[in-house]
Length: 73
Image: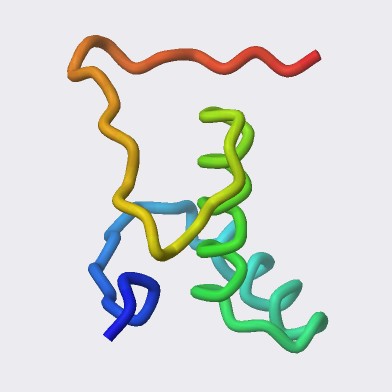
């Protein structure tokens, strides 16, 4: 079983109106909310680390200091 086939649960709180709109937008593009969130997380990882995500590799270790802010230009 590849690392990408394994799953872990991520629970978050979101405004109910925002959730409803998100689900409608996902359905309009024939995607599930989980698929879209996975894509967003993968893109965030790639932008933050500067490396393409490769599911066969171990996740990079990130320091345990305060959360790092990413500035967009």
